[in-house]
Image (cartoon, rainbow over the protein chains, first blue to last red):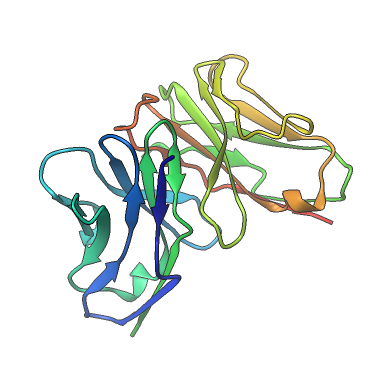
Length: 110
Length: 115
């Protein structure tokens, strides 16, 4: 069975500091991995995906993610966080369906 | 930019009543999904359509939930009768293809409160 784990319920960083949101996955076969962001009372917005190829994937709003097959991880990163990045972030893996992690709440303080 | 439309945005209903949600996917998207998101959790797939056909409804509580996409465009999700445990956000999403490489685009959701 496919699954993702987001080990941190919350991540707090100061504006301008690097931001990392962790994700590990479990899937048989090649993983298709995604990151989505959700703002309050809104639907999910697609940030980026890994299908194959380069392990460093660049996405929207300055976010990137690093795929590590040996550690079965797909951590989301941003070199310099903004207050507007405060939101709920979901990692997801797609095998026969899209399975989401429980989410990580990111708070960026000014 | 094209978006997935959902209505209503908020719905309060009493238990045992019927409730319905509507979704209009991005034009040209053949695949449509309904998810349920309980507070504090990630979305869980309820049903997936390819055009007008259901391709996965394994997690849909069929004794009370039904979904249709009659003309392969917009879709309706119904709950009858609603129960207290149905309180959640109901999200609709669409994609161009059903395969894993294609990202899904989500609507703003319908927040259901059952009293």
